[in-house]
Length: 117
Image (tube, rainbow, N blue to C red; front, top):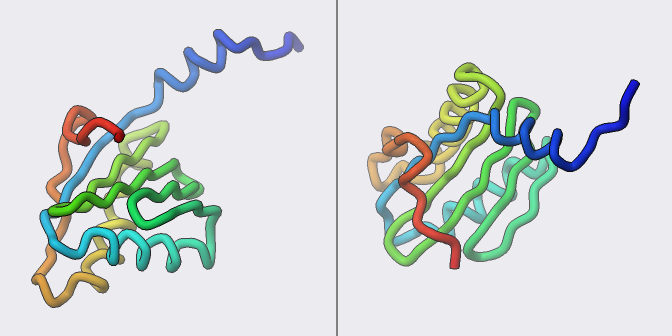
């Protein structure tokens, strides 16, 4: 079996599907931290006040908190993986953001996340 090269890893990553969501809120950092602390009970998570990375079994999620919104970018190998990512984030955020009548993030194709600062 031939060893994997860096170029083959880049090709594999480029086939990952990606979706982005946002929820306008003044409590983005609070929700990001709650989500990450909760997810850390079951999966690998790294986070701070403005960004979190979650390694789910079905794919990865990156969360960002801005002054007026929380953003999520999910990646996965299939539409089913993206659906799982959306569902997990939405269900948990619905619990944490109940005072804001949260129903679900506004999910879009991968072009909706603001540039990283």
